[in-house]
Image 1 (cartoon, helix red, strand yellow):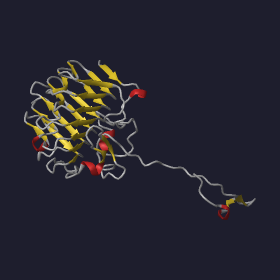
Image 2 (cartoon, rainbow, N blue to C red):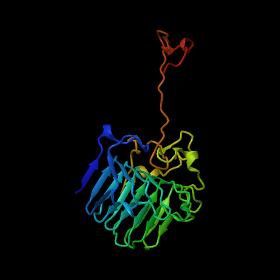
Image 3 (cartoon, helix red, strand yellow):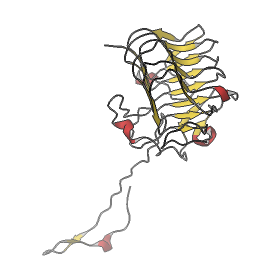
Image 4 (cartoon, rainbow, N blue to C red):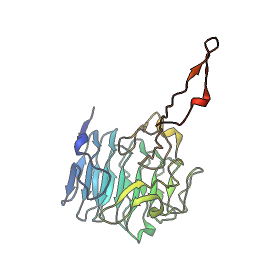
Length: 277
């Protein structure tokens, strides 16, 4: 069983910071805290004051955050798991913290953690020592696949001090130390994303992005967290890294060709003039 907080389709964010979208903006100590299975879907979530954590999980074995735009302009951590477990997919996550990991799994957490198809961006130029993910739990094995990790310059952007298994691949990093046989590194955010201008960030992929077909095929069929759509609700028909998928539209063309011959009818290709979309 779970409780879900979901934006209506007509009120969903557009994936652009500063644009309209249903959600929660907090000037208090937290945006949300919870201790049972909670699902946050298609929401705009922002912390505007200095705090340790924006979203904090104290319990629940199957909490999920999907399709959300999560941002802090205060140096807060984006997601902290103190108890239970978490699944994150198809989110844009923006942090400006120079000291706190974007997602932290504390030693008291327990349960499998999955992060698939998210786009993380750090706007802090001093983020050389910041990790995108930090796991201090011995009981939270983690899968970190198909994520964009831009602006985190730590040579080891994935921290794992608790001893849990950490599997990761098909990610895209600014840092050169992310690892993973099929991951790519040394990427520049402004080359791949529409805009990283503070206050109006738009983490959708550019049409020219090198990431649009470089992702993990297993994202569609993973038994624990299949991700079939992107942050905009579009069907994932290509294997883009991150929360956004760029589809090449299929255009159908029709034309008329005369059939001739009473005994053995056959197309008369001389009558073909042009393809008509």
